Each structure stands twice: as C-alpha cells, then as structure tokens.
Image (tube, rainbow, N blue to C red):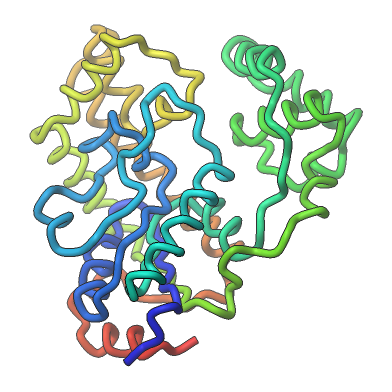
Length: 311
C-alpha cells in the first residue's frame, strides 16, 4: 500500500480537471482532499469559484473549502497554518493528503517555506488600497525602486496586488520582502517528500472548457452569489472580490454592462487568469511531474502510477 503520510500535490490552471483527478485518487487510496485555491476558501463563492458540489463532497473528505467569511483577511500564512492542521488530522486518521489548487504561491509556501512577515499596519494597508484604486501602481513602484530595488526585481511589476504587497511590507515593517524571504523557515511539506503533479492543458482545449464552465456558472447561481455580495457591500479592495468574473457580473447587475458583454469579458478574464497560472507553473514548477489534463482523471494507468507512492 502507498505510504499514507506521503502527500499528493496537484496544481493546474482553472478548469483543467484538478477536482476530477483528485477524486479519482482519493477513492483509490482513501485520501482526503485539501484545497489550495485562494478563492475557493471564501464562503460567498460556491458557484463562481467552482468549489466541489455536494455530490463531489460526498465522495471523499474535503477541507479548506468555503471556510472563510467574504470580508475576512486571509493570507498565504493563514492558509499554511490551516493546512498544517489538516495534515495532522489526516495522519491521525490514516488518510493520504491530496492537496489541489491553482494558486502557485500556496504551493510555493508549502514546499519551500514562507517568511514570517509581521501583520501590515492597518493605516498603511488602507493607504495602499487607495493608491492602487486611484493612481494605479506607479507611485508604489517608484517607492520600491528608491528603497527596495532587490524586491522590485523579484516581483511581477504588472500585478497590482504583488506591487501593493511589497510596498506595504516595506512601509509597515521597515524591511523589504526580499530580505524577509531570506529568513524563510523550513517548508511544511518539502518537495522531495511529496508526489508533485502539474496538469498540462492544451490552450485551445482549456479555453473551450473555461467558456463552457463560465456559462454553466451563470445557469447555476453565480449571478445570485454576486447579487448577494453587492447587497452586503461590494468592496473591490478586499481579496474575495478578486474572484474571476465577479467584477464583470457585478457590472452587469449594476447596469454597466449587458449580459453578453459580461459573459464575454468574464470568459476573457478567466482565460487570462489561466494563462498567468500556466506561466507560473512553467517557470516556478519546472521539476514537477507534468500530467496531460485531457485524460488525467480517466487514465487508470496514470492513477495506479501516482498512487504507487513514487517520488
């Protein structure tokens, strides 16, 4: 039998079939499925984040899905602490952990460690939100250029959230992200102790699945979810509001877009998100085992190979 303590890690872009593969593996080895997607943690996005449905949840234990309030702060550090508890529980129950998701930063923190950066000062966080919302990110980029060029070289300067994070850490702690990362503690799951997989999807195949799934979301309650969040108070600065398609559907409900425009833009945003995910996996997970997404969940030989506890 495979070692129940050896986790299986499955990364992949949105709509690539991660959940189906994870369920096949969980049923094969009696495993539990642990979420590694930064948007599926939020309670408000059952449909829009493509969380497992009740039928899927009944097939295997699932953890860290929809357990965070929509307006709550939830960082990679929060997730890592939650995963630690899940891994301890899985070990006690003799379950093989299967950790799946599309958030590359979560997997990086899990297998390489995460710097223990102090919490951001609330006033600085608010100032960062204002800068990002009203002045783009140039002022923050200029500040990093003058005061923390090492971090600036290491972050994606086109990603406003990454720029804001680097700016906030430096302003709040007086130490740049790059310096904090040099103090990173040992990882919770060293890569050589896990079976690490990346679903490799053909671009056109994936694009069709993304478009089909986005339209299915509209038919199964995504608009109701967005409407409920709008009624409770829409705040584009909080992480939950970054859900792919949420902004476009909110614009439709507020009369700023037609339904067709919202669908087109939502699908386009999802495809762009998948492109960014694939770029991350290609650049940051070069030594993970590639798996063909089109046939992964139905490939019985592959399932047996993965569950044989190979490195």
